[in-house]
Image (tube, rainbow, N blue to C red; front, side, top):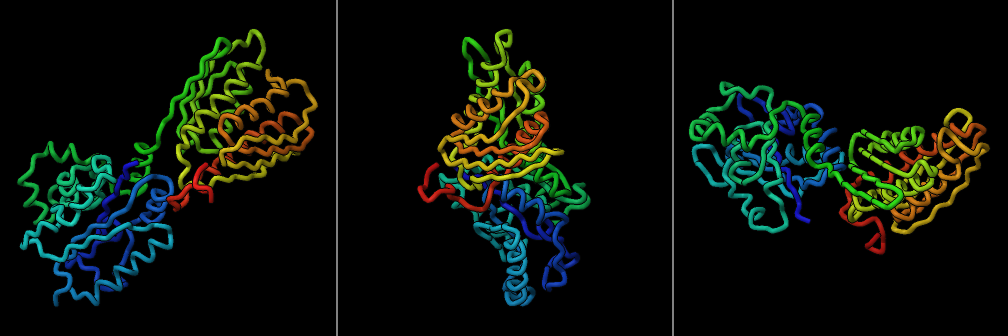
Length: 388
């Protein structure tokens, strides 16, 4: 799978600029951009981008800006980011002055040619994130997209170098390149999440039911569910809400017969959808476990997305039905899900109120699933076998 890159500027994007010299030449001048560490960490954990830093450092290595001043500060910045799991696969620094017109100086792409030559990267779906117009033009020259982060994007706030470039380009070219103008890393995270989260659509049709499911594994917990069984709709909404998975389930079943075929086929289709949406399982936690009370009831769930199907069910109900659902169908739903999603499920619940028990089970399942699908910083499949 081709990798996408975030080419990220340093000064004015990760840390605040320091006018009038714009040189960060002492530790006390380091001021991180508001919320950058928090939201860039979420981008690293949740979204599939490599991070590459590219920065112009005017006259680095000269008497005006000696290496011995720059590197301790620069490394200090990188080390702080690393403590939050923010790792740059490479750092590119141009040392020239604007008047030298170096092809390596942004918006020149001299330092980034290897990314264009490689077939490992999806450059058109990559982004340059920076505060300068030169960052926007770098994106244009690379053939990727731009996020322009700046407190004020008006022309009068551009530097002289930026104004010189601005006069030589078409406004429509900028509009094509800039997909987001903002002054907020929160908005950057939300925008990248919205375009990165994959929606998987899966439909299962039999002579008894027609189940269509749209699922986004890394969503916001939104749901739109219509199964024809009101209480079951409510329970499935709990899975979406507590797992942060976006879930759309539309079902037409032979409810004039009973609830069996509808609930069974939803379990099968949801499991198949989930298995497909997880793809290769690289970088997920794999295991999830949670214990959740609801009044006098207590549910505990442990699950393993390890590729093997098994349901252990330790739940007893006192009633034949809860709402319009036969209580025996709850076991059957999770069994169908386990078989189709290829996961181990251990479900244990105690309590006197059957409604409380089953609702706590579905909430607990959502929480355990959220833990299991959580992304970490690994690029490996979470198994010594190398396959799940």
